[in-house]
Image 1 (cartoon, rainbow, N blue to C red):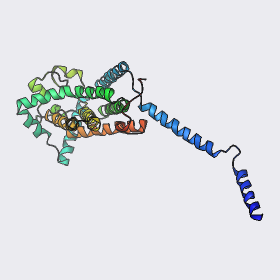
Image 2 (cartoon, rainbow, N blue to C red):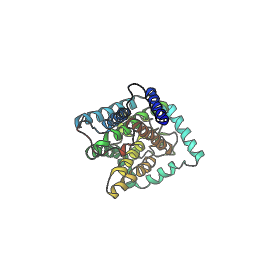
Image 3 (cartoon, rainbow, N blue to C red):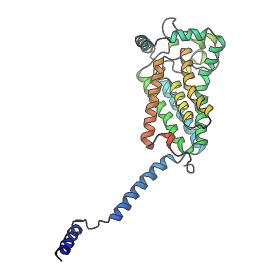
Image 4 (cartoon, rainbow, N blue to C red):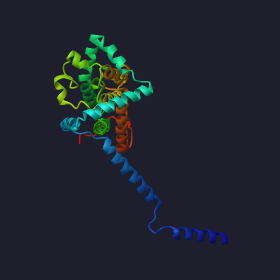
Length: 288
């Protein structure tokens, strides 16, 4: 009798201490609901892709704005040349200042340097666009998050062009480097020749040839199925690095700057979508 009374008293006290509207089952349901809503919001960010025409306009506008801002950055020639001297001296101290030897060696093989000139002038854009189209068609659920990486990478590069104007090796004072496009009058490059005035010649740091090519390489290696395609994806940024050095368009450290910008792009995408872009669901809901 006494024990029963004691248990009853404890139960009464516990009930009295519990909030009036407390309901354990309801609490669990609410928590689960909030979790589901959060997961749903997260999925809604990643699971939709824009319509094809919206995406075409978006990419075109983004690149037009990027080009306009890049070319609007004042061409601070003296500062850019001084910065190039500083980068070259820094590489000497690091023991990696071999771009001049590589540039001269490649120049001595005409068919090779001509191929590299055309590679530099074209594939930077062609491969990036092809990868974007492939992502949109084959990995719609991952498209927006992966596209955000390259957009953010490119946007942060604009700060580099403004803060640290840099002459490419081919425009440095002295004759240490050969401007291979100028020598061979290669068609299609805005780096030298008649089209040079259309592009800011002192926006070498960071290298977006490297930023974009590493993005393409990682994307292909992470998502493509055939082994040979993944291998090509992994080789693409390596070949691009060789090309930008052989043609005297960039220093090694410009490439490092491009990779750092790409890291920022991946971090931003991860922060927004809560997951690495390549780990998002492959399929998407209907276009937004």
